[in-house]
Image (cartoon, rainbow, N blue to C red):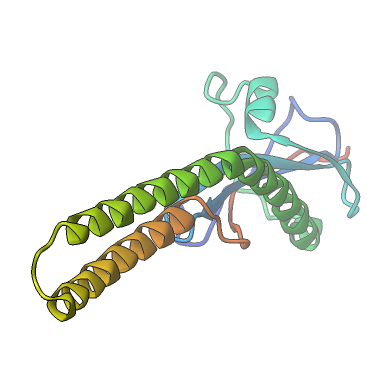
Length: 191
């Protein structure tokens, strides 16, 4: 096991190009209710000890290429090369960009559904208001009593639908700040 806020740094002897570094992140973006709706594992690859990012790809691609889960890799517990610490902020920025593009895709996919939900609520609200009007037209009580009761019921409908609309918006709208966690760093010596 690893300490809190720590991730394994594995030096591999094969599967990666000489000098290649792969930083693996787990990224989450919640909706406005705090429920994660975008969850991605992403790998940021560097060609060497520099700050140039070669590729950003889904972790599954790297896992298949390295046969992670099928092939055993020993952790030599070697000292962590200093360039990995320098590369980390660049990897975080690129993983963040990747997650934000995933968020944009999610939002684009959900927008029609959000609009459809809003339309359904609007129609249902209209039917309830119409039903309220009909029920008070047939009411034989004095106008002042009818109006007071009608206004109270209208207010109840307004509050109920405002709450429903707020809930739908919070569930189907995401927060613009992803949470990123470094899961692992895989690297190979350049020699």
